[in-house]
Image (cartoon, rainbow, N blue to C red; front, side, top):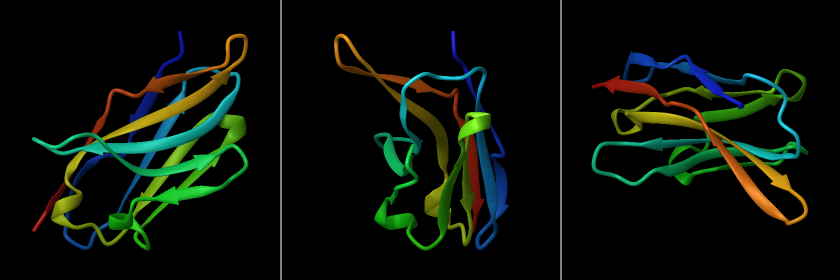
Length: 121
C-alpha cells in the first residue's frame, strides 16, 4: 500500500513563503504526473499545479508567477514552493500522484492526507 506523506504546511503572514513536500512511501510504477490540489472551506478541491514525468508543468492562473512545482523522480517526491502568499491561498493542500496502468488501460490516483496552509492578513 503506497502512502503519500505531506509536510511543510503552517501559518504564515501575507507575502511570506512556504515549501510543501510530498513523499511516496515506496516507488510507484507508471507515474504519469504529480500534482498539488487545494480545498478551502466551502469550496471544491481545485488543481494548483501539476508536473508530468517528462517535466511539463501546469499552474492555476491564480498562482502563476508565485508558486513553483518540482519533483525528484528517484526520491518519489514532489515539492511546491509558494511565494508571495495571500490570504486567499489559505486551504488544505493535497498531494496527488497519478499512475497509468495497462491491461486494462486506466488511471490510478493516490492522495496524501492534506496539510493546512493558513495565510494571515
